[in-house]
Length: 248
Image (cartoon, rainbow, N blue to C red; front, side, top):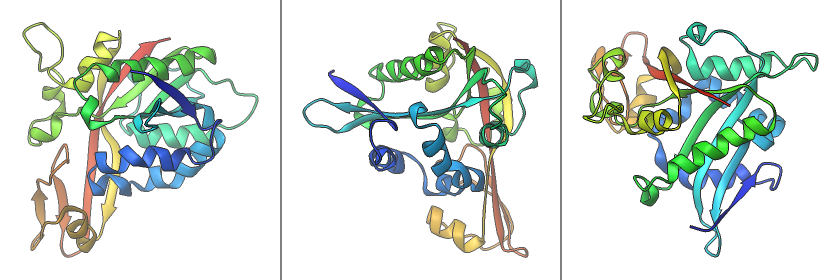
């Protein structure tokens, strides 16, 4: 497939290009992480060269999206925090002192056009993301991976799910398998990677469901149940992800 890489350095409307496949790819509630929304525009402005799309030659349609960021972090992988993606974003923008050296690249998201899922194209996108960090002298790529099949098993603890394997010994989960085949190490679960909160009305709008009383509810696309507190008029979703790491 013929495509070209377009980064935030090449065009001012990269976010619009990314939205072509990003918005349809995620459940509505995933667009309401307060930390992500706080830093999203700044990520594109300050680290434009880490954000890219792949556009098909001729048709110009967007085939894939990649977002990542550099971190001033060189700790032990086992010490990666439970807060996962939200921590990475905060860390990225709380350590902007020019005297500090970036050591680590952190993946934010990779989205592939639906018709290309299962074709192996996702491997190329991950490799392109790794090249961005490698070209800038970073030591490793860490990723708070969102296992793409976990939403089918929302009641299974993530700690158990990441241990599931196919007969060939590779992870059962598709996205974990992509990273593993490219040499990534599965480090551990980050149990509070994303925090999404809203009123009960918000959650009813986001999910198309009704929540008449307090309790835990399974909603489409969520990796674990959400918690509804009717008295506080609040719904909370705390998403677990999986830290995986590549040497660059």
